[in-house]
Amino acid sequence: MTLSARLALSRGTFSLDVEFTVPTGTVLALLGPNGSGKSTVLGSLAGLLPVAAADVTLADRRLAGPGLDLAPHARRIGLLSQDALLFPHLSAVDNVAFAPRSAGQSRVRAREIAAQWLTEVDAAEFAKRRPGQLSGGQQQRVAIARALASAPELLLLDEPFAALDVDSAPAIRGLLRRVLRDGPTTVLVTHDPLDALALADHVAVLAEGRIVERGPTREVLGAPRTAFTARIAGLNLVAGVAVAEGLRTASGEVVTGLLSPDTVLDEAAVAVFEPSAVAVYPHDGAHEGSPRNTVETTVAGLEPHGPVIRLRVAGGPPWASGLSADLTPAAVADLALEPGSPVTLSVKAAMVAVHPAVD
Ligand SMILES: Nc1ncnc2c1ncn2[C@@H]1O[C@H](COP(=O)(O)OP(=O)(O)OP(=O)(O)O)[C@@H](O)[C@H]1O
Image 1 (cartoon, rainbow, N blue to C red):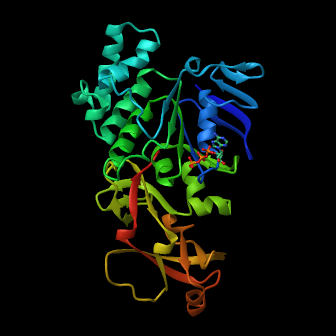
Image 2 (image 1 turned 90 degrees about the vertical axis):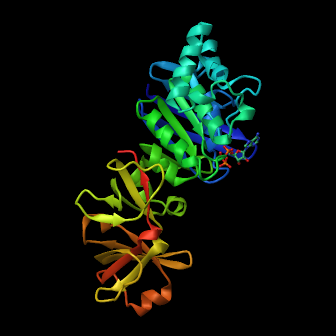
């Protein structure tokens, strides 16, 4: 069910004008700062907001177009927001059964479907409880089951981890990774690049109602082409497979780091670290102390980046090419760095986070 959307609208002084496609079964993450229009895109796709001009098709079904604006319930879209928004007077199983029941399934069949989905999201044991008797994370599991139980052709996720505490967010993220693997075409709104890395095949970066950059997630976040994306992402990313010590790259080097709780060993992962976590030495410099990842490479470029100088490197083992490090202007002068200078980069293992990633 490929989604093709063009949406244009104004809300007061804010205007939105975007066009994008999400191929069947893939996940597009919409990233952007507060107020950039992410929720407005989701609301428009769901048919909850009036649009000035829209052309939205899902496979061969037109949801909106000239003279056509299907009502939300007729769009066959599942929506999951940051708050679970369950019906407080219904049990978990009845909340989930509500979706297939509204789609015309018999009461018995709707309950069977609900029970299957509650099992799928590890919430079968809460089936009889009402939302008030569940934690935020448990409610969000039930809400995921409800969104999927309607067999939506498009799933819209609006910051699904934002209301969860740091302990339950990774488990729910892992759960969504699992159910989205063979799941519906999905648009995920987030301001956290790590959510995009874990769940999305592609990202589109929104700024002031326009898409300023788009492409495969790791490409866009690992090597942002616009200063804007670099500000919100700007992370060093190394792709590979999760191993107990951290991450193993395709060419066999191990980048030592801390595994996030939802990481699965031997599955695709990325090691993520800030340019400010990278120390730079001349080749013969000493770098001892806590366990570090150390690599010999060459300065490719130096650019001012706010108050610091961002150094990019090229050469050395494949995983090191394109890494960034932030230095003070004084350090750049002390080390006499210029393009072509040989340098050793060093990153403390404790500063490297290993996250699951979409293959
Ligand atoms: N009901 C409304 N009436 C008028 N303007 C609105 C309304 N709701 C939102 N806006 C404006 O639309 C713009 C986009 O808002 P939107 O909620 O889509 O951004 P967002 O990227 O989802 O932000 P956040 O990350 O804060 O949720 C903002 O400038 C906002 O002020």
